Length: 56
Image (cartoon, rainbow, N blue to C red; front, side, top):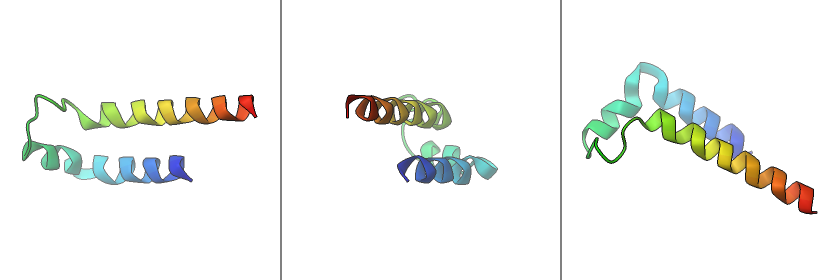
């Protein structure tokens, strides 16, 4: 469920450059490209989920 929500958010804000418009209001140096960070969290979530499944 979490993965589905993350993908939906990613696709919504990537369309028409909405994510960059939001981050232009804030410090762009701290968050360089937001769509590089979101897939990273997706990978972390997937790896933690698989680790929990393997341990159970």
